[in-house]
Amino acid sequence: MNSNLQEFLVALSEINAIEIEVVNTDKVRVFSTGVYKERIGEISDECLYEKVISEKRTILIESPKNN
Image 1 (tube, rainbow, N blue to C red):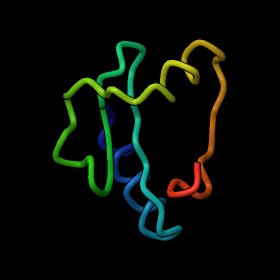
Image 2: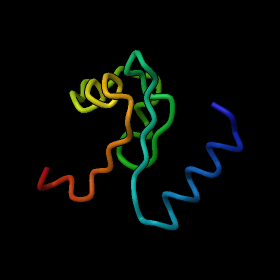
Image 3: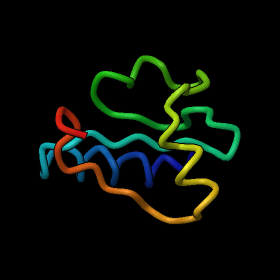
Image 4: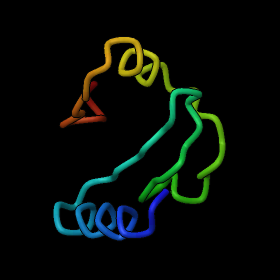
């Protein structure tokens, strides 16, 4: 992933107090902030990514503890 994009995503994450995770179509984490930062390069087992990839749209989780 482009280093300028990584810097932007880190800043966006910090300014908005959110976590950002980017996975490719194989569900491999290519970027992450927060708790998954150390797991970049691993395959994500989140079923949400299958929905995002199949529907080709962004999904924003506003309250992860409740969803």
